[in-house]
Length: 115
Length: 114
Image (cartoon, rainbow over all chains, first blue to last red; front, side):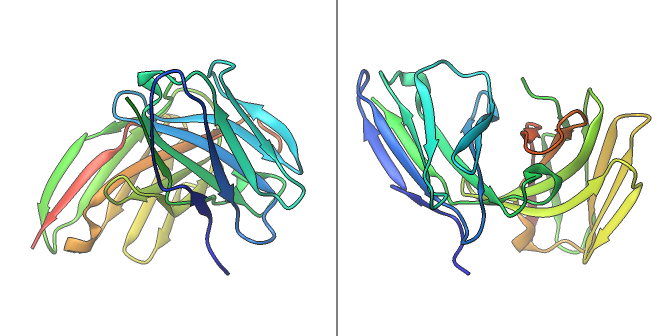
């Protein structure tokens, strides 16, 4: 089985722009979670989707949004980019409804740089 | 906010030595997981220990969990240069029934010198 894939791998944007990141989970996995990793704040949970529904959301402003499609692929969008949004964005998929009861499989991440 | 606190923040050892990393957390958990990350890439799941378990082994890895002290440790035996990476503990809060989130610690940067 192919692993979790994320596109693009690298992205450079300027302040005020918006960006869309994509994540394709492992085939058959219906849960997709997103995390932001920065040197200062570490790994922080953004949101989790299961069967096209957002089940959980972290403490991020409304500029961060996401969605999941019927094929379980997920996108996250960040509008009005700020310098502090520069980070590695990781998505993870899980095979079970109880997604955090078992291991999660992470993608390689998208490195976003905001200038 | 981060729930897990990891200790030490950085660890440098020689090949063949054992490496021990510690993780403390604040609230009740359903399970605790350890992940490895190489050079800012994706995370790789290492091991999961449930709140009713005290110790678990996987190859050269040994994880212990002490829920009374809200702490866990990861031991890597006979380390290799390829073990050089950042190691994160992640907890799953006890009140989540289905989905939920992983709450990560700040990580321990392990360097294994040949």
